[in-house]
Image (cartoon, rainbow, N blue to C red; front, side, top):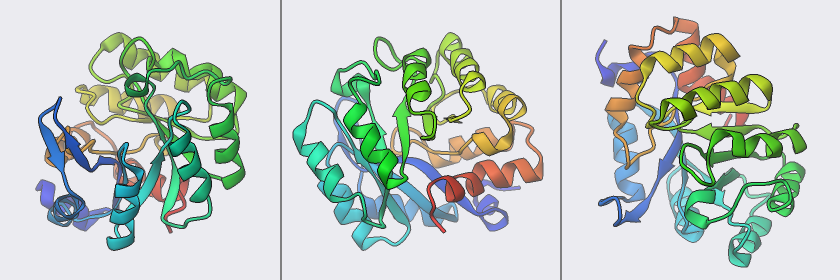
Length: 246
């Protein structure tokens, strides 16, 4: 099967995309360009975020395929205010936490205000996972334990380090409200391991565009050895259900 045909067979949702410019990585992506990529690969919907929440708000208003996650920095009163103002906005469905870029340890104490707002709204949380000192998988376990009724998705599930990848699997096995999203994680075999260990319902597909390419991330999933039913869940059904996109 060609990559472009995968979306004709399955209802694909990209659970991890960015818009904006990122000079340190020499990448950028506009909302229009993101939507063009979704069309190319027959991806039905995408979750999008960036540190510019107002830019995301504009994008999700224009493009029906896009749903926003609020970039929530506990050290920034502006992002907290934006979060509070959009808790009932149907085009926002959760928050993105990036302790590495924003410089904080994701403890329950630091994130109490944000997590309580998320809980009241029925939202979900996507976090960056895979880099020291603040975003290792074990850093999120106390948060998942304290707020055990809030789904927390470990974006990149440890990224490129085998110790952190295995750590993501171990933490998710202990905490039932932790889900895994493997964009940027290079080992297709670990996707299959995650599905076998946790169940296909707790693994979501994402591209991490523009940092990674849709074709690469889709290929990685295609060769992982998942069954038809597991592909259906991971490629889109899980994101639709978890984030309430239907």
